Length: 240
Image (tube, rainbow, N blue to C red; front, side, top):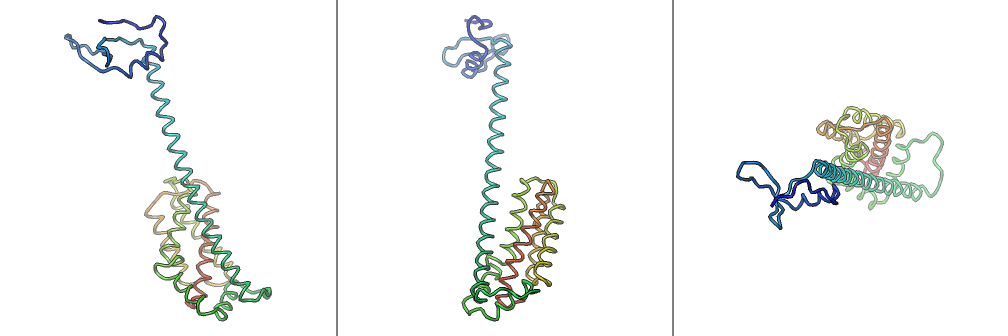
């Protein structure tokens, strides 16, 4: 039994819903038709119903893609938040150490960060020195591999994982190295240059980059902070 048009009181979207419960079949003339799965009734849908079905399917696809984009953005923001918290925690730890070892005395005018931590290395207790050595070891939290990976992941996250501007990010890392060197007051320890080289290598392999000057400035800023924190541990460890 065939029901032509279906119209008569049913909306186009109702027809679309009905389409979801049908299966394809081929009649004896080879013409494709739709057969309701539960009744076996052959149904010919109107053009309006087919257009509604296509629109509904497109809307579902668009919603799914939007959800995926939102999830990726949330993941990037969570990563940035975690990396910033780790960096802030270590920076605060170093500031507390400076205050403790210098007895709360202000630094002399003209002192650089390098001179400050050279002084701290002379006054630090054996436990602090040993921890610094562990921190910058090959598998340490401020070693080349883990520090370069954090810098690389920060660059990726700030870029929105945009795979187009690795060279811009490499330039930002180099800018951060220059800023860190100026803030340090002299050349950074060898471990810092090795870390920059490792970060650039990761970016070159990734060959995807950030999409705006603002993001690049943030990468440069974070690079400076990471390298400064690393250099502080290196000085305390007596390797610079």
